[in-house]
Image (tube, rainbow, N blue to C red; front, side):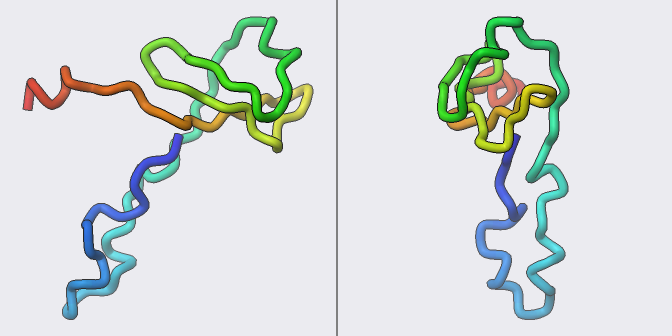
Length: 84
């Protein structure tokens, strides 16, 4: 699951710091999960909604042994914003 690459809106706007200091350590999360057996017959480009996570598309890098899905649209998370 991809997130913002930088933790600052303008990482190159800080003259006293290197933009690399603003890399988001959570910009890529690889999640291993159990899926329904029916997803084994899906093809790259097929789209799915995974409950409570968002909408995903099967990646071209998928193989029979390792299915890869990329999130295309996250679900809105109003709960976490409300509790901050």
